[in-house]
Length: 138
Picture 1 (tube, rainbow, N blue to C red):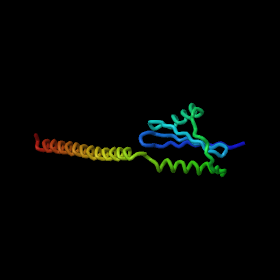
Picture 2 (cartoon, rainbow, N blue to C red):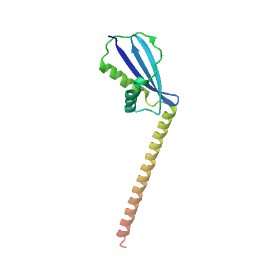
Picture 3 (cartoon, rainbow, N blue to C red):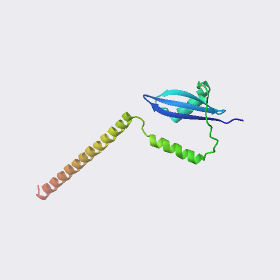
């Protein structure tokens, strides 16, 4: 009995999110490329695989080396987490937007803090003025 393995890699290419299905069967590699459009969620990818996997048109099989080593599942999970963490936000434009958003947030905090302090100062001066008025006996 031959071992069959599959792998799906989802990445951002130019303006669309693309998924590459790799299937290794009988020591031969077949590949299929699928364009998702907008960034797919995990449950959308899972649903797509369940509904459309058997309709995918894979490339002609190419001979490949199959590694028969057993891998520790915890190590695999760690590597996957590290890959996902390193990528972060995909495009330069998205990174620029995120940076702009953070700058606007800090500016908004500064303005808000200054307004709050000015209001406290105004209230304090009003209170002091009232105390002086009472002290004068008016």
